Length: 92
Image (cartoon, rainbow, N blue to C red; front, side):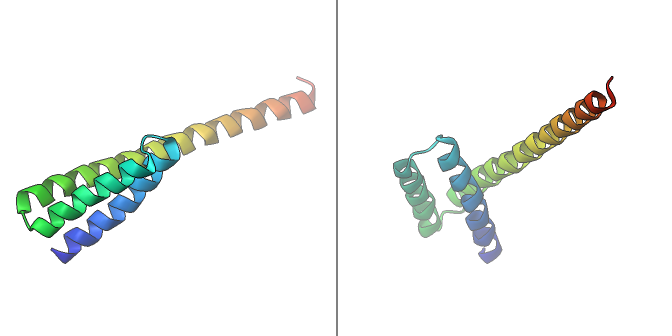
């Protein structure tokens, strides 16, 4: 159970930071959802803990995948800009 809770904490950090930064959550949302997760863990109910664990893991995975997609798109845009700049400098 310790490993699961450690993973949930790590996922929570990723999800909460992202949701606050994007405006998907208010600070009140973060607090309320955090309290709901804590209540589930404190209850010891394995089904409820599993549900929150899955939700957190899925949400954190989405954040990571989205960031990879954005970084890839930005890298492509930078490469295209550098190519266009090189063409202008060569006079083409």
